[in-house]
Amino acid sequence: MSNKDYMIEITLTMISFFWCWFVLTNANQSLGNAYLWLNGISLFLLFVNILIYDKQVRVTFQKEKGRWLEAIFAGVVGWALVMIASYIIFAIYEPTSANLMSILSILGAATPAFATSVFVNFVTISFAVGYAETMCWARVLEFICDRLNIPITRQNMMRVSFIFTTIVLAILFAFYHFTAKGITNAPGLILVAIMMWVSLNMVAYYNGETRQAILTHIILNGSGALAILMSGGKLLFG
Image 1 (tube, helix red, strand yellow):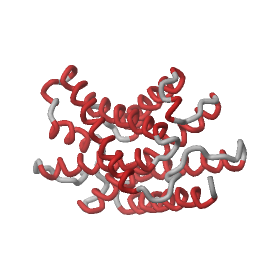
Image 2: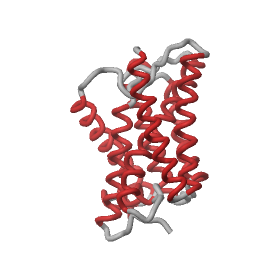
Image 3: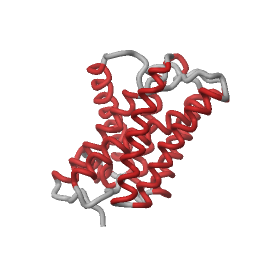
Image 4: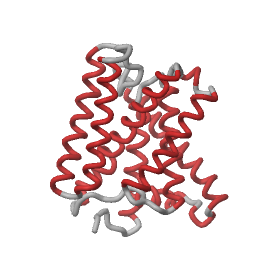
């Protein structure tokens, strides 16, 4: 992997960092601060792997040049997989929520708004949050898998150790939403756990490339935000 590959990720992470800094200083201090930390952790783990460990990074935003239509299509497929899995689980756990608009609304409700501007909220929820969360958890996945000697590749997706690691990280993602965001409703926590589990498996499926998983997260968050607006809700906090 070339230095240019690292620079694409570093640039995007810094953009996300400064956007969250804007949110912190102009909108919601506690939530903006939480996402500053996620971007900071991503960069820290990237530099740890480059400078301290094996000087190789197996996970990054883009490994292959171009192929954006394929990546966007993969993001849509990831969105569909999360929706299908959520529908099945909700049909068993909470049948009244087992429809598309309810699931999307729950997804939107699981991502609190940041400011009194609908535009700022939509950009933050869809893009900054989608990027920061997915990139940070992918970096943590890489760090753990490196320590356990589990290559993040399509061939290793069915290894028990990899499956266990992704399930634990998905549960921790739900716990993060519970503690940092104050999300307490079970359907919302189940949905975000499914979303991260699918995202981490997409990272492995694409052999360490994260843009497909990030696009899935962006589409999910964006569709959830749009569902709130379409249902007559306001994408505002407070």
